[in-house]
Image 1 (cartoon, helix red, strand yellow):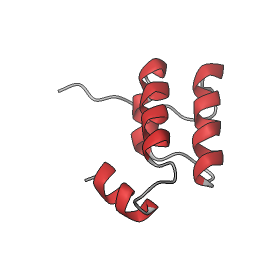
Image 2 (cartoon, one colour; image 1 turned 120 degrees about the vertical axis):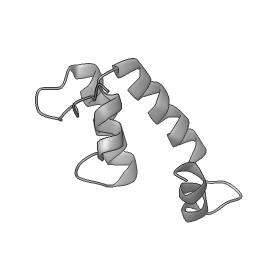
Image 3 (cartoon, one colour; image 1 turned 120 degrees about the horizontal axis):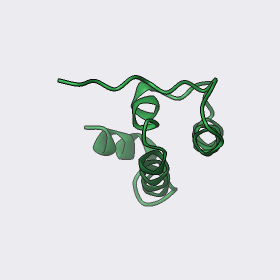
Image 4 (cartoon, one colour; image 1 turned 180 degrees about the horizontal axis):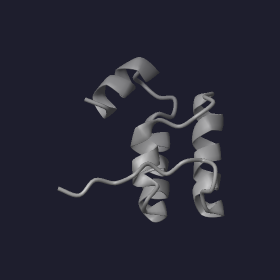
Length: 73
């Protein structure tokens, strides 16, 4: 079965870098995890997935830990 290679920050196209930067800024992290690196092989999917997660994790009725447990189950 084919496997994707993770897309690293160094050498990524500007579109992907913009999404990586937003992920790192929003989550307060120094590097994106492998989930994001692998879907970065298709930058439009990366952007769409991040926008969906970002919207779901916005402040609301549920606390962020509960949202993460539901989102990543």
